[in-house]
Amino acid sequence: MAFSTALNARLKCATPILQAPMAGGGDTPDLVAAVCAAGGFGFVGAAYLQPAQIAEVCRAVRQRTRGPYGINLFAHMPAPRPDDVAAALACVTPYFDELGLPPPSVPDQPHPDFGAQLEAVSQSDASAFSFTFGQMPAAAMQSLKARGIFVLGTATTVDEAIALAHDGVDAVIAQGAEAGGHRGTFAASFDAAMVGTMALVPQVVDAIRVPVVASGGIMDGRGIAAALALGASGVQLGTAFLTCDEAGVPEAYKRTILAASETDTIITRAFSGRPARGIGNRFMEEVGAAAADAILPFPWQNALTRPLRRAAATAQRAEFLSLWAGQGMRLARRQSTAELMRHLIDDCDAALRHLSRHVR
Ligand SMILES: Cc1cc2nc3c(=O)[nH]c(=O)nc-3n(C[C@H](O)[C@H](O)[C@H](O)COP(=O)(O)O)c2cc1C
Image (cartoon, rainbow, N blue to C red; front, side, top):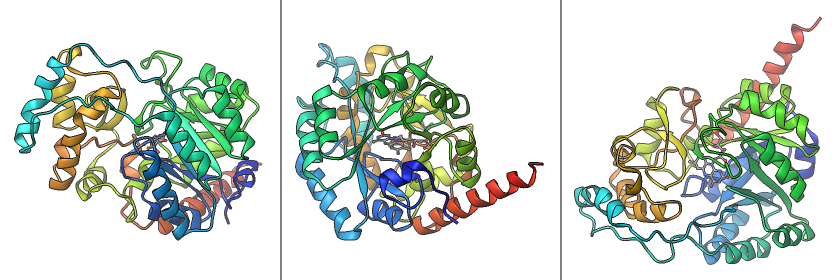
């Protein structure tokens, strides 16, 4: 039996299991549609997409499902172009050589224009919008909400959650330290904001009035039951979906997750310039050990390493892939999205029944 909260009623789906947006190709339209078909809520991670590509992906999702879905962007203030990129270029050149690529360069436009991306979101038929890395400009927030779009912001501390609630978000995603991918931190130091999901969620729940979505390290029905017990109104899972058949990451990435354990991830800036959790590999270790000025700030480092990551995906070379994944990896399974969703729903139900048997 699918569990239900006020959140899924607002999102108009059967159960409050959100598939995390996974910018960079993990969240294919097939994955998003399969999550929707199974009663969850799928997100398109559109942060790296140009407006026309956002429109294209939304059309592809709509061809596959009539259900509701959401779009996600990075709400960050891009760092200005660094004056000196020589050390960063020198640091990655050997890897470009190893993969037979032309010498690396830093593009003038490292990231799509946020305003244009937002316009594409407004033009789409997505019914929810989520963001991470920051706060939304007030006018953008108002315009999304005026269109009836349900807005979710990402927080990694209680103060960030309060700031987002003050801005008018409809729900806050509380991202614990276990989470795979980039840290959403925007108003604290990255180190201080490494608060585990178990500690973060109830403190955020107590601090704000809007629904809280727990995210980070949740891989199965037990994790969902625990999040609900902490007061969350829903959950957002990323890593659990990455090894599904419909996920768009290279096979080498899926195989690495399936062979990895809870101690195998590290927080790194090596690929993108912004701290993110992923499975440690050669690139992360070697570039991570380089001098601080050899890694550019986000999004410049991300743009610098993009050709390398693309070539590595084609060549199935996991040592050069940004293997974003959370600490719950041992619980990842190779399966279809429909199977994963069925397990999540049934196992959460079983966990809740199991717990209620112990209540006298
Ligand atoms: C491969 C990958 C890509 C991600 N990309 C995004 C993204 O584009 N936007 C976002 O808000 N969160 C992104 N995240 C973070 C997720 O929203 C979420 O916090 C995280 O997956 C939860 O932890 P888990 O992986 O242990 O389930 C990403 C996570 C992963 C694993």
